[in-house]
Image 1 (spheres, one colour):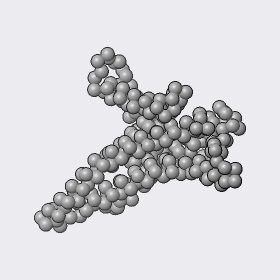
Image 2 (cartoon, rainbow, N blue to C red):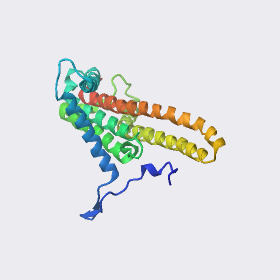
Image 3 (tube, rainbow, N blue to C red):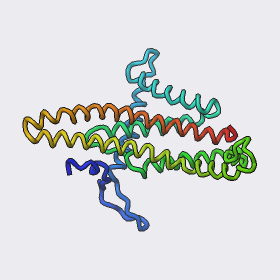
Image 4 (cartoon, one colour):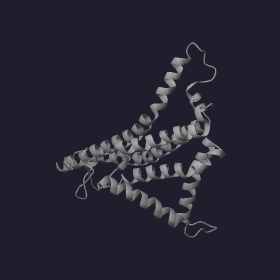
Length: 250
């Protein structure tokens, strides 16, 4: 069980299930680490902004860089009109980033390694795009599916492709994050298992374990980078999709 690379993704009940309306509800390790992620974000930002010094300390600098990074992303993709979506994009980026980073610690649970979590976030984003687009432009928003300048003869086929592409967004958005986090942690677990197994074989095994140990260290550094990049990709694609809601003709 210790060397099983899939065991780390199992959702476990931390409390006894309670039946409500025929559904069993319980507090799981996934829910726990979602709460830990939110508490971590809240704690860091509160401490970073507590003093508001003219010359920022280390934690305040982290908070300011964090804020400015997402703010610049929203401004560059959505423009001035899209600044009202900054709290949403900042929250999504922060949650995915911290959840990914927490999953890198031993015995912690990787919330974003479950497709039900990433799919829920992706469906929320795409659903919001539809709501905002229709609220702002009415039926005119649907010209998003009718590209400008396309010959009338092939317009039905192009529109069908655009519709399929649009409704594929939550699938690609959710699966990308889920797949990267799942695959990375499995590979790390496999190489860590090699190190343990070889180390139990004696001196020769310990020498042989040097290669998988070096690979595990390198992959750990890579996974920290992937954890950040996946949060960035999720946030910037959210901005791109929201831009379709604000400017469907572009």
